[in-house]
Length: 102
Image (tube, rainbow, N blue to C red):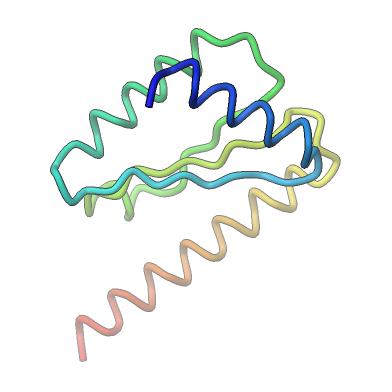
């Protein structure tokens, strides 16, 4: 997919769903997840947009899963959504490491 296509999809989604956010996860299966995150970061920085990007946790990136939350800067529920995503990821991390210890 090209930069123009990805950005078009993202902006269209946010135009239709102003009160929501999107979490994207770069799959580590082909060992290119970090590279995808770098590319997406470059695209994000090159784009004049009303969308913010928030990285989703060091524990996931340490395992090769690079992910971020995209959300509108003016979303009135932004802080609530960001906190919910981090709580969910923290719970997943705890659950994942707990099952390894068993």
